[in-house]
Amino acid sequence: MELLRFSTAGSVDDGKSTLIGRLLYDSKSIFEDQLEAVEEASRNRGNDEVNLALLTDGLRAEREQGITIDVAYRYFATPKRKFIIADTPGHIQYTRNMVTGASTADLSIILVDARHGVLEQTTRHSYISSLLGIPHIVVAVNKMDLVDWDKAVFDKIVDDYGKMASALGIGNVVFIPISAKLGDNVVNKSANAPWYEGPALLDYLETVSVGHKTGAGEFRLPVQYVIRPINERFHDFRGYAGRISGGRIRVGDQVVVLPGGLKSTVKEIREAETTFDEASAPQSVQIRLNDEIDISRGNVIVRADERQPAVTQDVVADICWFNENPMQTHTRYVLRQATNETIAMVRAVNYRTNIDTLERETGVSSLAMNDIAEVEIHTAQPIVADLYSQNRVTGSFILIDEATNETIGAAMIKAVK
Image 1 (cartoon, rainbow, N blue to C red):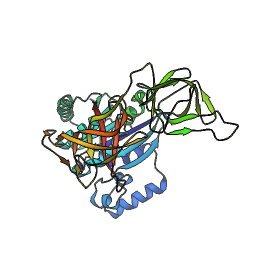
Image 2 (tube, helix red, strand yellow):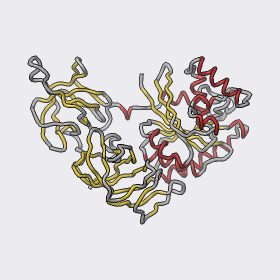
Image 3 (tube, rainbow, N blue to C red):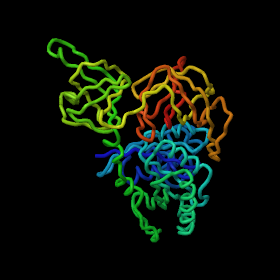
Image 4 (tube, helix red, strand yellow):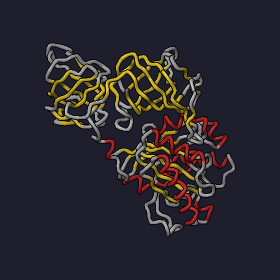
């Protein structure tokens, strides 16, 4: 079955955790002992009914405060599709957590409280979803039961969000009126909104296209491991293993190995002991070539007849800073991109984005934790780079502190020099 990864985002108390709890509960994807534990926790908190948000709010601090702090991942499946949910926090100080949780998402569910409408945090979460290149956005207008399922309220939110999405260049937006607490339009269509003709949320999640994940774009294989001859029996075996991050490859295709630019043709495609005539993203495979050429971990194999990525030492990227220590320009960091590592430094901060107003702030030379900015990066060695809009793997990287080995920033490439 296909896998759909999706994240949830929204302002505090918009009902993100409750929505996920409802999805798990109504789709019968929780165990009896889990439900018993949540029922007991609900009673201890004085709730008259089961608090489904406790299924995802796993940290003690979250349960005490009733908010989401960390990213909670949950898995469930229906007969049609498998799902991985990232329940991301809504507070501004946990922006880095949202970026982490949404970075692999195929779809983002942004919750809006029907009583409050589109808020600054809604804009912020939509901006981050757009920045991360999430191809599908669902605006779940929650707590419609508290406004008596008033269609005019829903229509105003659709109009307000549509104007904001247009300004941000966001497309593929679907609006669904729901009540996460009561289950209306979450797993099953509700009779309380006869004016709504669209699908329930789960119906949409089961049918939305995830074709962008499989074989889309140009072929990219970042080499993770070189399989060398191990004994006399396999004296002529040399393969290059990795996970295909885009496109398709077939036996007989001519390929180019970057950054060196050496060419060869594909002799064999293997997955363990099985051979294939072709393979596509996101398969993990071994590729054998007809020529013995110098290939090492961190190189990228691409098809010769397709658009080539840039081989460069200078990129412009949007970065989210994760660390309590501020980012400084002209400081050494380790840059890890796909399977490649090199030393890098931030040459300049072009601007920092105010993630509440989306205004661009110039004249900045350092970044604090949770800041998002456009920066210019210079690397010690050439990297093989696509734009993030073209390939999420070869178009992104993380920065690592040399001394502590902590991940201190995540970036999406938007231009190459």
